Length: 273
Image (cartoon, rainbow, N blue to C red; front, side):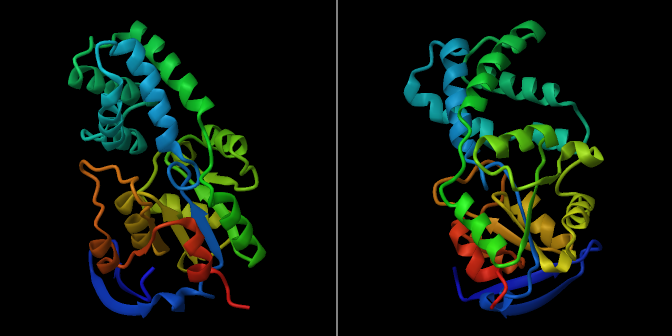
């Protein structure tokens, strides 16, 4: 990580104040770290890849396997924002999931799903997805290192609390509490209230709490706007593409800390001894 990070604090009214700080200066200023779950602690991209392949073999049987990466890319990009509509409380979970499934069917020449066939599609997709959950190799070590340094650790997700609690337990992170999910307040990130509630439950001041996530806008920039330290986890080769902003230079210029792996966090955020 760069030794210097440009940070721009953004208030809700849109006013900004430019400041340049040393990244090392963040050490000792953070009492708590909140993690996103999917594609931050858990390798959800790989799980989705397995699920997409399983569903494609059944529902896009004409599509060669070497094109499954294209299907996955469209799924992750979600260009029409169906999942984000769900996190805003505008549609229910199955409505957004069926819309996204039919987006894949239409784009890759499959038959559109009706209510009955969607149930069958989702059984294949979801069953494979759950069986494919794994943590990133750096997740367990960084949690242990932060806790050992006296940092309070929790998680905040735009998925349901029950689902993410079960996921964290399944991948060996049962001690990372899921403090706020999309069903806690009825909406999710980037709304600043979800970050405030997560900090309240973690017991830390937002200004002394970092939020670490793989999406620049709804994770890092949204956390920054809510008064937290926003950290964008830009793992090599895992960007979503499509409508998602993913420019490291622009991220740093907006006040976000950019890391390329969780192993970088303790040196940046942990208290000095």
